[in-house]
Length: 328
Ligand SMILES: NC(=O)c1ccc[n+]([C@@H]2O[C@H](COP(=O)([O-])OP(=O)(O)OC[C@H]3O[C@@H](n4cnc5c(N)ncnc54)[C@H](O)[C@@H]3O)[C@@H](O)[C@H]2O)c1
Image 1: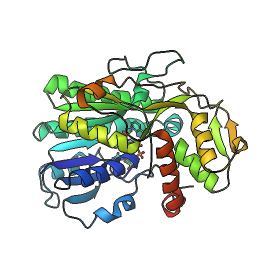
Image 2: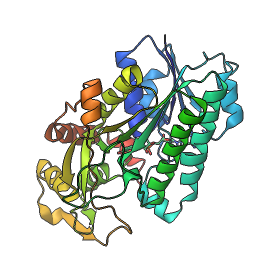
Image 3: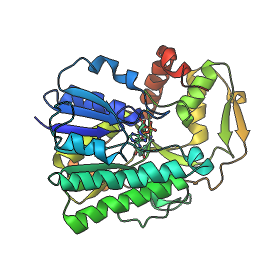
């Protein structure tokens, strides 16, 4: 039985990951550790709360004292974790532009605290979930980012994630902590907080409101279904090489292409798009060369964008109570 310590397991990807792991590795124990910021939702996993081998702890990754209780096995008699999967972060670029301090506290200091804990309590295997945004911005003809592309973050969010990646790598090089890192593209799917582009657009249209789109909407991202991301993380955790980084990406679409595809599914035309002034320093394009994870771990995305988009729309249509209370 593995004993997973998952940080940020009440957020979008963390919720999906905990569900995925529960389904595919029911014998493992999962401690879901989350501060429940505005982005965290404990009810997303309400059905797990009564089950064996699952425990939710509300806590901040900067809280050393609480972490030490958990990792010494004195906290509520939980088993000592032997695998950390680190999702917890402040994640919204627009918020980081308004105030970067929570980003530095959680993403940088919080990651450093977790690394220290992992080191102190037996060099615990540590997987760090990161983003393609650490690499900066590509032009239309540039080659995609690879695992060895130099970092060039351009928003406070990306800078804080870049700093955390560097710290993780330094704990491998300096102390031999068994780490892996993944840099992933834009995820979409169920349980994503409705401030992010796709759920924001869906919930706007469901409320008969237009969809604001930054600039010309031509900014390009790779769109990966969250379940494909979870499968990639599973492969890295089980078979990835210690000390290595893996890029995880999917199909490239511009923001306006994504919103057009969504509007068409919802029976609406382009007049539902409202172009608004651009985000400062808005990265033009991210793209990832995923040949490493494809070759070494035989991973590739399985969910085509059209199907994933339709499933995601259906989920938001069916879970109005979940998202309505999150909209301010
Ligand atoms: N969403 C994406 O498209 C995407 C793409 C690539 C990488 N990532 C990375 O994946 C991870 C998860 O992203 P997400 O979209 O699920 O984020 P999210 O914002 O939906 O969830 C973040 C979770 O972390 C928790 N959290 C925040 N600060 C905390 C703290 N100090 N202590 C404990 N918990 C805290 C929140 O309560 C929330 O549950 C992040 O590290 C992010 O950088 C996300």
